[in-house]
Length: 390
Image 1 (cartoon, helix red, strand yellow):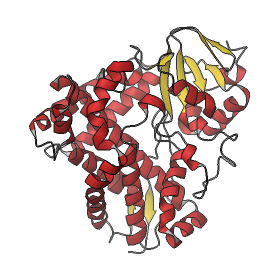
Image 2: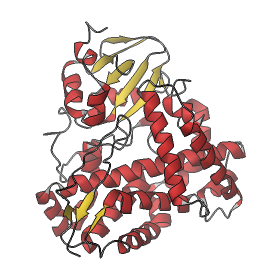
Image 3: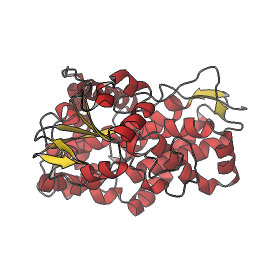
Image 4: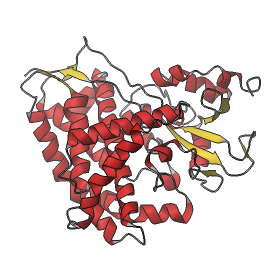
Protein backbone atom coordinates (compact mmCIF):
# COMPACT_ATOMS: atom_id res chain seq x y z
CA UNK A 1 0.00 0.00 0.00
CA UNK A 2 2.73 2.49 0.96
CA UNK A 3 4.54 1.91 -2.33
CA UNK A 4 1.34 2.36 -4.34
CA UNK A 5 0.25 5.45 -2.42
CA UNK A 6 3.46 7.27 -1.40
CA UNK A 7 1.76 10.60 -0.68
CA UNK A 8 -0.72 8.93 1.64
CA UNK A 9 2.09 7.03 3.36
CA UNK A 10 3.81 10.33 4.18
CA UNK A 11 0.77 11.89 5.88
CA UNK A 12 1.12 12.50 9.62
CA UNK A 13 -1.79 13.07 12.01
CA UNK A 14 -0.10 16.21 13.32
CA UNK A 15 -0.19 17.74 9.83
CA UNK A 16 -3.91 17.03 9.49
CA UNK A 17 -4.61 18.53 12.89
CA UNK A 18 -2.59 21.75 12.51
CA UNK A 19 -3.01 22.76 8.87
CA UNK A 20 -4.33 19.97 6.65
CA UNK A 21 -4.76 21.99 3.47
CA UNK A 22 -1.28 21.62 1.89
CA UNK A 23 -1.38 17.88 2.58
CA UNK A 24 -4.91 17.56 1.20
CA UNK A 25 -3.87 19.47 -1.93
CA UNK A 26 -1.05 16.97 -2.59
CA UNK A 27 -3.38 14.05 -2.06
CA UNK A 28 -6.07 15.56 -4.30
CA UNK A 29 -3.57 16.18 -7.12
CA UNK A 30 -1.69 12.89 -7.02
CA UNK A 31 -3.83 10.39 -5.08
CA UNK A 32 -7.47 11.58 -4.85
CA UNK A 33 -8.31 8.17 -3.37
CA UNK A 34 -5.33 7.32 -1.19
CA UNK A 35 -4.44 4.80 1.49
CA UNK A 36 -3.32 6.77 4.57
CA UNK A 37 -1.74 4.49 7.20
CA UNK A 38 -1.95 7.22 9.85
CA UNK A 39 -5.76 6.96 9.66
CA UNK A 40 -5.93 3.25 8.90
CA UNK A 41 -8.08 3.77 5.83
CA UNK A 42 -8.73 5.46 2.52
CA UNK A 43 -8.96 9.25 2.23
CA UNK A 44 -11.03 10.86 -0.53
CA UNK A 45 -10.19 14.48 -1.35
CA UNK A 46 -11.76 15.27 -4.74
CA UNK A 47 -15.22 16.82 -4.65
CA UNK A 48 -16.87 14.59 -7.27
CA UNK A 49 -15.60 11.47 -5.52
CA UNK A 50 -16.65 12.79 -2.12
CA UNK A 51 -20.18 13.28 -3.45
CA UNK A 52 -20.19 9.79 -4.93
CA UNK A 53 -19.35 8.26 -1.55
CA UNK A 54 -21.77 10.37 0.49
CA UNK A 55 -24.66 9.77 -1.92
CA UNK A 56 -24.36 5.97 -1.86
CA UNK A 57 -25.20 4.56 1.58
CA UNK A 58 -25.63 1.08 0.11
CA UNK A 59 -21.94 0.74 -0.73
CA UNK A 60 -20.54 3.33 1.71
CA UNK A 61 -22.31 3.09 5.05
CA UNK A 62 -22.06 4.66 8.49
CA UNK A 63 -23.69 1.60 10.06
CA UNK A 64 -20.54 -0.09 11.32
CA UNK A 65 -19.43 -0.86 14.90
CA UNK A 66 -16.19 1.04 14.28
CA UNK A 67 -17.95 4.34 13.48
CA UNK A 68 -16.21 6.70 15.89
CA UNK A 69 -19.14 8.88 16.92
CA UNK A 70 -21.42 5.88 17.43
CA UNK A 71 -18.81 4.31 19.74
CA UNK A 72 -19.30 7.33 22.00
CA UNK A 73 -23.00 8.21 21.64
CA UNK A 74 -24.52 4.88 20.53
CA UNK A 75 -26.96 4.26 17.64
CA UNK A 76 -28.83 7.29 16.31
CA UNK A 77 -29.71 8.97 13.04
CA UNK A 78 -25.99 9.77 12.82
CA UNK A 79 -24.89 6.14 12.65
CA UNK A 80 -27.74 4.31 10.91
CA UNK A 81 -28.58 3.90 7.24
CA UNK A 82 -31.57 2.91 5.16
CA UNK A 83 -35.03 2.69 6.67
CA UNK A 84 -33.71 2.78 10.27
CA UNK A 85 -31.87 6.02 9.57
CA UNK A 86 -35.01 7.55 8.09
CA UNK A 87 -37.09 6.38 11.05
CA UNK A 88 -34.73 8.05 13.53
CA UNK A 89 -34.33 11.25 11.49
CA UNK A 90 -37.89 11.88 10.29
CA UNK A 91 -39.41 13.11 13.59
CA UNK A 92 -36.84 15.91 13.74
CA UNK A 93 -36.67 16.84 10.06
CA UNK A 94 -39.66 19.17 9.60
CA UNK A 95 -38.83 21.64 12.43
CA UNK A 96 -35.36 22.14 10.93
CA UNK A 97 -36.52 23.01 7.41
CA UNK A 98 -35.50 26.48 6.19
CA UNK A 99 -38.92 28.13 6.49
CA UNK A 100 -39.57 26.58 9.91
CA UNK A 101 -36.17 27.70 11.20
CA UNK A 102 -36.74 31.28 10.09
CA UNK A 103 -40.19 31.41 11.64
CA UNK A 104 -39.31 29.72 14.89
CA UNK A 105 -35.76 30.85 15.62
CA UNK A 106 -34.94 34.19 13.95
CA UNK A 107 -36.10 36.43 16.80
CA UNK A 108 -34.65 34.09 19.43
CA UNK A 109 -31.21 34.08 17.80
CA UNK A 110 -31.22 37.85 17.32
CA UNK A 111 -32.28 38.51 20.92
CA UNK A 112 -29.70 36.13 22.37
CA UNK A 113 -26.89 37.53 20.22
CA UNK A 114 -27.74 41.07 21.35
CA UNK A 115 -27.89 39.97 24.98
CA UNK A 116 -24.47 38.34 24.81
CA UNK A 117 -22.83 41.28 23.04
CA UNK A 118 -24.26 43.62 25.69
CA UNK A 119 -22.27 41.73 28.32
CA UNK A 120 -18.90 42.72 26.83
CA UNK A 121 -19.37 45.55 24.32
CA UNK A 122 -18.05 48.20 26.75
CA UNK A 123 -14.85 46.23 27.43
CA UNK A 124 -13.11 46.97 24.14
CA UNK A 125 -11.84 43.40 23.82
CA UNK A 126 -13.12 39.84 24.15
CA UNK A 127 -12.55 36.30 23.01
CA UNK A 128 -15.42 36.09 20.54
CA UNK A 129 -15.41 32.30 20.65
CA UNK A 130 -15.90 32.11 24.43
CA UNK A 131 -18.00 35.25 24.81
CA UNK A 132 -20.30 34.93 21.77
CA UNK A 133 -19.94 31.87 19.52
CA UNK A 134 -20.02 29.21 22.24
CA UNK A 135 -22.71 30.69 24.47
CA UNK A 136 -24.95 31.55 21.51
CA UNK A 137 -24.79 28.02 20.08
CA UNK A 138 -25.55 26.50 23.49
CA UNK A 139 -28.41 28.84 24.39
CA UNK A 140 -30.13 28.46 21.03
CA UNK A 141 -29.99 24.65 21.08
CA UNK A 142 -31.07 24.48 24.72
CA UNK A 143 -34.04 26.70 23.86
CA UNK A 144 -34.84 24.83 20.64
CA UNK A 145 -34.98 21.48 22.37
CA UNK A 146 -36.86 22.79 25.40
CA UNK A 147 -34.06 22.17 27.89
CA UNK A 148 -34.27 25.39 29.86
CA UNK A 149 -33.25 23.65 33.10
CA UNK A 150 -29.95 22.56 31.56
CA UNK A 151 -26.99 24.67 32.69
CA UNK A 152 -25.33 25.95 29.46
CA UNK A 153 -21.85 25.72 31.00
CA UNK A 154 -22.51 22.14 32.02
CA UNK A 155 -23.72 21.35 28.49
CA UNK A 156 -20.52 22.87 27.09
CA UNK A 157 -18.47 20.60 29.33
CA UNK A 158 -20.40 17.54 28.20
CA UNK A 159 -20.00 18.23 24.51
CA UNK A 160 -16.30 19.04 24.93
CA UNK A 161 -15.81 15.58 26.45
CA UNK A 162 -17.71 13.97 23.56
CA UNK A 163 -15.62 15.84 20.96
CA UNK A 164 -12.38 14.87 22.69
CA UNK A 165 -13.21 11.16 22.76
CA UNK A 166 -14.49 11.07 19.16
CA UNK A 167 -11.29 12.79 18.02
CA UNK A 168 -9.12 10.40 20.03
CA UNK A 169 -10.85 7.34 18.54
CA UNK A 170 -10.41 8.77 15.02
CA UNK A 171 -6.70 9.13 15.74
CA UNK A 172 -6.52 5.45 16.74
CA UNK A 173 -6.80 5.62 20.52
CA UNK A 174 -9.13 3.27 22.41
CA UNK A 175 -12.27 4.82 23.92
CA UNK A 176 -11.81 5.92 27.54
CA UNK A 177 -15.50 6.31 28.38
CA UNK A 178 -15.42 10.03 29.23
CA UNK A 179 -17.42 11.03 26.16
CA UNK A 180 -19.90 8.20 26.67
CA UNK A 181 -20.46 9.32 30.26
CA UNK A 182 -20.97 12.92 29.12
CA UNK A 183 -23.47 11.76 26.50
CA UNK A 184 -25.41 9.89 29.19
CA UNK A 185 -25.68 13.18 31.09
CA UNK A 186 -26.98 14.85 27.93
CA UNK A 187 -29.62 12.16 27.45
CA UNK A 188 -30.80 12.51 31.04
CA UNK A 189 -31.11 16.26 30.57
CA UNK A 190 -33.25 15.69 27.48
CA UNK A 191 -35.68 13.22 29.08
CA UNK A 192 -37.90 15.79 30.92
CA UNK A 193 -38.43 17.74 27.69
CA UNK A 194 -40.32 14.80 26.17
CA UNK A 195 -43.40 15.71 28.20
CA UNK A 196 -43.43 19.45 27.45
CA UNK A 197 -45.61 21.48 25.13
CA UNK A 198 -44.62 20.49 21.54
CA UNK A 199 -44.89 24.17 20.55
CA UNK A 200 -42.03 24.98 22.95
CA UNK A 201 -39.86 21.89 22.58
CA UNK A 202 -38.68 20.14 19.44
CA UNK A 203 -38.01 17.10 21.60
CA UNK A 204 -41.65 16.96 22.67
CA UNK A 205 -42.75 17.54 19.07
CA UNK A 206 -40.52 14.70 17.89
CA UNK A 207 -41.82 12.41 20.63
CA UNK A 208 -45.36 13.07 19.41
CA UNK A 209 -44.50 12.02 15.87
CA UNK A 210 -41.87 9.45 16.74
CA UNK A 211 -43.00 6.76 14.33
CA UNK A 212 -42.35 4.01 16.82
CA UNK A 213 -39.16 5.33 18.39
CA UNK A 214 -38.90 4.69 22.11
CA UNK A 215 -38.57 7.58 24.53
CA UNK A 216 -34.94 6.63 24.96
CA UNK A 217 -34.33 6.72 21.20
CA UNK A 218 -35.97 10.14 20.91
CA UNK A 219 -33.79 11.40 23.77
CA UNK A 220 -30.62 9.94 22.22
CA UNK A 221 -31.31 11.56 18.84
CA UNK A 222 -32.12 14.87 20.52
CA UNK A 223 -28.85 14.67 22.45
CA UNK A 224 -27.01 14.05 19.16
CA UNK A 225 -28.66 17.20 17.77
CA UNK A 226 -27.65 19.14 20.87
CA UNK A 227 -24.06 17.96 20.57
CA UNK A 228 -23.90 18.62 16.82
CA UNK A 229 -25.70 21.94 17.05
CA UNK A 230 -23.26 23.27 19.61
CA UNK A 231 -20.04 21.94 18.08
CA UNK A 232 -20.58 22.85 14.43
CA UNK A 233 -22.17 26.22 15.10
CA UNK A 234 -19.56 27.40 17.58
CA UNK A 235 -16.89 26.45 15.06
CA UNK A 236 -18.75 28.09 12.14
CA UNK A 237 -19.09 31.38 13.99
CA UNK A 238 -15.51 31.37 15.25
CA UNK A 239 -14.05 30.51 11.84
CA UNK A 240 -16.21 33.12 10.12
CA UNK A 241 -14.96 35.84 12.46
CA UNK A 242 -11.38 34.80 11.74
CA UNK A 243 -11.84 34.79 7.97
CA UNK A 244 -13.78 38.04 7.73
CA UNK A 245 -11.66 40.04 10.19
CA UNK A 246 -8.46 38.75 8.57
CA UNK A 247 -9.52 40.20 5.21
CA UNK A 248 -10.05 43.99 5.45
CA UNK A 249 -11.13 44.30 1.82
CA UNK A 250 -13.83 41.62 2.16
CA UNK A 251 -14.95 43.02 5.49
CA UNK A 252 -15.34 46.45 3.87
CA UNK A 253 -17.59 44.90 1.22
CA UNK A 254 -19.86 43.46 3.91
CA UNK A 255 -20.02 46.77 5.77
CA UNK A 256 -20.97 48.53 2.54
CA UNK A 257 -23.55 45.88 1.62
CA UNK A 258 -24.78 43.70 4.53
CA UNK A 259 -26.55 41.46 2.01
CA UNK A 260 -23.10 40.00 1.27
CA UNK A 261 -22.94 38.55 4.78
CA UNK A 262 -24.62 35.33 3.67
CA UNK A 263 -21.92 34.83 1.05
CA UNK A 264 -19.23 35.48 3.64
CA UNK A 265 -20.67 32.74 5.86
CA UNK A 266 -20.79 30.24 2.98
CA UNK A 267 -17.27 31.11 1.86
CA UNK A 268 -15.93 30.71 5.39
CA UNK A 269 -17.62 27.31 5.63
CA UNK A 270 -16.04 26.34 2.31
CA UNK A 271 -12.56 27.37 3.42
CA UNK A 272 -12.79 25.66 6.81
CA UNK A 273 -15.69 23.25 7.38
CA UNK A 274 -16.50 22.86 11.07
CA UNK A 275 -16.40 19.09 10.54
CA UNK A 276 -13.39 18.39 8.36
CA UNK A 277 -14.18 14.74 7.62
CA UNK A 278 -16.96 12.18 7.60
CA UNK A 279 -16.37 8.43 7.78
CA UNK A 280 -17.95 5.63 5.78
CA UNK A 281 -17.34 1.86 5.59
CA UNK A 282 -17.32 -0.23 2.41
CA UNK A 283 -20.07 -2.88 2.39
CA UNK A 284 -18.67 -4.85 -0.57
CA UNK A 285 -15.60 -4.94 -2.78
CA UNK A 286 -15.83 -1.96 -5.12
CA UNK A 287 -13.91 0.49 -7.28
CA UNK A 288 -13.59 4.23 -6.73
CA UNK A 289 -11.71 6.26 -9.35
CA UNK A 290 -9.97 3.07 -10.46
CA UNK A 291 -8.83 2.16 -6.95
CA UNK A 292 -9.92 -1.20 -5.54
CA UNK A 293 -11.55 -0.92 -2.11
CA UNK A 294 -12.21 -4.01 -0.01
CA UNK A 295 -15.30 -4.93 1.97
CA UNK A 296 -15.03 -3.46 5.46
CA UNK A 297 -12.47 -0.78 4.53
CA UNK A 298 -12.71 2.62 6.20
CA UNK A 299 -13.25 5.53 3.79
CA UNK A 300 -12.68 9.00 5.21
CA UNK A 301 -14.27 11.70 3.07
CA UNK A 302 -12.35 14.95 3.44
CA UNK A 303 -14.91 17.74 3.29
CA UNK A 304 -12.02 20.16 3.75
CA UNK A 305 -10.31 18.68 0.70
CA UNK A 306 -13.45 18.64 -1.43
CA UNK A 307 -14.16 22.28 -0.58
CA UNK A 308 -10.83 23.42 -2.02
CA UNK A 309 -10.96 21.34 -5.20
CA UNK A 310 -9.41 23.64 -7.86
CA UNK A 311 -11.42 21.92 -10.60
CA UNK A 312 -14.54 23.39 -8.94
CA UNK A 313 -13.37 26.51 -7.08
CA UNK A 314 -11.05 29.03 -8.75
CA UNK A 315 -8.19 30.16 -6.51
CA UNK A 316 -9.54 27.82 -3.82
CA UNK A 317 -7.35 29.02 -0.93
CA UNK A 318 -8.61 32.62 -1.18
CA UNK A 319 -11.48 34.01 0.91
CA UNK A 320 -13.84 35.48 -1.70
CA UNK A 321 -17.29 36.31 -0.34
CA UNK A 322 -18.56 37.01 -3.88
CA UNK A 323 -17.58 33.57 -5.16
CA UNK A 324 -20.37 32.70 -7.58
CA UNK A 325 -20.41 28.94 -7.07
CA UNK A 326 -19.88 28.90 -3.30
CA UNK A 327 -23.16 26.99 -3.02
CA UNK A 328 -21.25 23.94 -4.28
CA UNK A 329 -19.35 23.68 -1.01
CA UNK A 330 -20.06 20.51 0.99
CA UNK A 331 -19.29 21.71 4.51
CA UNK A 332 -22.55 20.21 5.80
CA UNK A 333 -21.87 16.88 4.06
CA UNK A 334 -24.28 15.56 1.43
CA UNK A 335 -26.70 12.78 0.69
CA UNK A 336 -28.98 11.19 3.30
CA UNK A 337 -26.72 12.34 6.14
CA UNK A 338 -26.62 16.01 5.19
CA UNK A 339 -26.58 18.07 8.38
CA UNK A 340 -30.10 18.41 9.78
CA UNK A 341 -29.33 21.69 11.54
CA UNK A 342 -27.56 23.48 8.68
CA UNK A 343 -30.20 26.22 8.31
CA UNK A 344 -30.12 27.02 12.02
CA UNK A 345 -26.30 27.07 12.05
CA UNK A 346 -26.26 29.47 9.10
CA UNK A 347 -28.80 31.72 10.79
CA UNK A 348 -26.79 31.89 14.01
CA UNK A 349 -23.55 32.62 12.17
CA UNK A 350 -25.06 35.39 10.04
CA UNK A 351 -26.69 37.03 13.07
CA UNK A 352 -23.57 36.79 15.24
CA UNK A 353 -21.37 38.39 12.59
CA UNK A 354 -23.92 40.98 11.59
CA UNK A 355 -24.71 42.13 15.14
CA UNK A 356 -21.04 42.26 16.10
CA UNK A 357 -20.12 44.36 13.05
CA UNK A 358 -23.02 46.73 13.75
CA UNK A 359 -22.37 47.22 17.46
CA UNK A 360 -18.60 46.89 17.92
CA UNK A 361 -17.10 49.88 16.13
CA UNK A 362 -13.72 49.20 14.56
CA UNK A 363 -13.91 45.46 15.27
CA UNK A 364 -10.59 43.80 14.48
CA UNK A 365 -8.49 40.83 15.51
CA UNK A 366 -6.07 41.34 18.40
CA UNK A 367 -2.61 41.09 16.76
CA UNK A 368 -1.01 40.11 20.06
CA UNK A 369 -3.19 37.02 20.51
CA UNK A 370 -3.39 35.26 17.14
CA UNK A 371 -5.08 31.90 16.67
CA UNK A 372 -5.99 29.59 13.82
CA UNK A 373 -8.30 26.59 13.35
CA UNK A 374 -7.03 23.25 14.61
CA UNK A 375 -8.46 19.78 14.90
CA UNK A 376 -8.40 16.43 13.18
CA UNK A 377 -12.19 16.00 12.96
CA UNK A 378 -13.73 19.24 14.26
CA UNK A 379 -11.82 22.38 13.30
CA UNK A 380 -11.96 25.72 15.10
CA UNK A 381 -9.55 28.17 16.75
CA UNK A 382 -8.82 27.91 20.46
CA UNK A 383 -9.78 31.58 20.73
CA UNK A 384 -10.78 34.58 18.63
CA UNK A 385 -9.49 37.59 20.54
CA UNK A 386 -10.75 40.85 19.08
CA UNK A 387 -10.49 44.56 19.81
CA UNK A 388 -12.85 47.44 19.09
CA UNK A 389 -13.34 51.10 20.03
CA UNK A 390 -15.45 50.82 23.16
